[in-house]
Image (cartoon, rainbow, N blue to C red; front, side, top):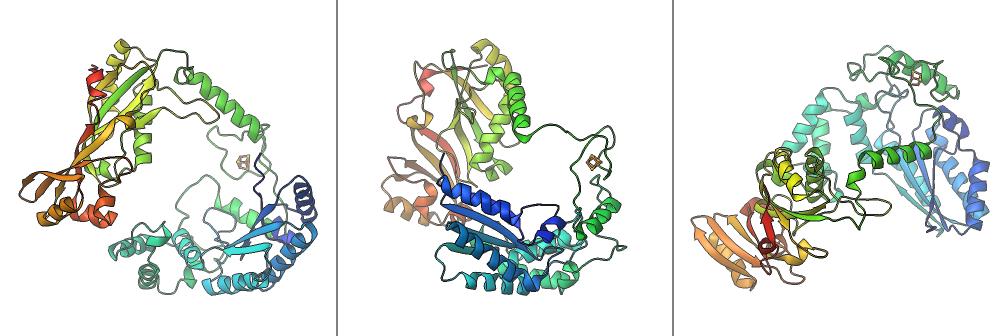
Length: 470
Ligand code: SF4
């Protein structure tokens, strides 16, 4: 086993604070585990903490974390990575009434902790972005104006915000100010009697139960796990629902895997069984152009399952359906001619009867243009057959495309009609796709609206070895 790291999500070193969270991570036990792990060869441990937790005092939090980590490091002499975040009291939890600390309070606390270990090469401290935590709090705890906030930010240019390099803080900060004014009102402590914006959503667990838990938690009293019959009804067990008890995580997972394997036994075909390679030609048009490659794989996995066509799975611990695509399309590019292959143990005759179901199970924009059985003696690699592609670009300035073709010997113009230019790109070893040839990916997509019109085969395989099904 690779001994890379151990993770302790203790949340707070304060044991009363842990009890408030219904959690126990006693310092002596953590120390003991660390010492044992060190003896067995572990070199690194990670600790996760949160600040602003109910039942803890923010003014002493930094000092408590510093003392805790210093002690662990001195006693165990192990590398420690410490990650700290701001607690965001979420709706539908016992702490939905609690205040969320401000960005400034969080940042001051993080800085004190980071500074304390600046010269300690065994301890690395990182913390969550306080602006993101504020935004998360506002979106989680806000009222119907959250919709206005998201629309405002989007209309001002906020897109792909989950990726740090695309997050435009100025846009979001201005939108938050314009829609809500001061956010401290949203993030403040709420009164017990107050109508909360999310009260209208019924998640099963009642508000009365949550409040009772909140009061109990603040006294550091733990709540037992669910049992049947239940002595602390939360409201979730109704309409015949009851808790699953007496199962450990490991045995529950093992049972689920066993049931899945039995149900889909025909999907897990052993290597010696005769398999049939099937080639599918399909389109990716309309809204489907916004499906990423990973989602395309899921789309076909589901469509094949719905149509009852058993796909051969890879072997090993984490079996995956054997579906291969020829040169996956970049996000945003339309295509009139995409190819994939999958392997199945289903015979040709039965397969023919299911192909219509496969077409019907695919979403709008993805249409099966043809399904072919490939006659192959051994392993078949679709990508090895891939020879290039033809693209059609819509542009107001065809001259730009001409320059592109002049600069790249593997790009040639094959047809020009008004603002539409058809180019051919022959892929050779190591040659990137159309975006990389043309530069900036997203700008290129918006500017030229590329569409792949044909995928070229190196040796006219597999088409000349394939027979049309259905
Ligand atoms: S057993 Fe059911 S009703 Fe009782 S606490 Fe658990 S989920 Fe709620």
